[in-house]
Amino acid sequence: MKTHTIAGELAKPAERLIEDAQDLLAATAHVAEEKVIEARKRLTAAIEKGREAWRNVQETAVSGAKATDRAIRKHPYRSIGIAFGVGMLLGFLARRRD
Image (cartoon, rainbow, N blue to C red):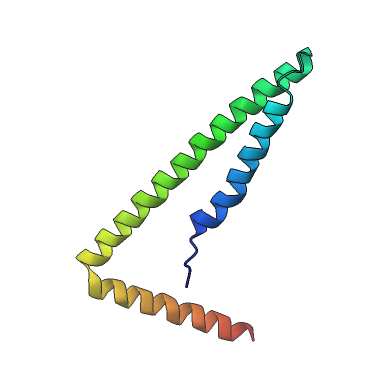
């Protein structure tokens, strides 16, 4: 059974978008019109900003997961109690809507 992660599901469309943008840049490489050249520069800059933002998101997610893991390992029973309480609250709220 394959496990899917949120990051993996978000990465696929982002990678396709980057590939399509790079294909567009390559396809318009021979065009020397000023507007096209400016658009290519903006697209290249946007791709780089997108990559940097994605790296930041990944780093934040990893550091958050590590901090959560440390907290759970440091206080396992408290973590179980909190998870149980949150589950009960969500169950109560879901049942109340019916």
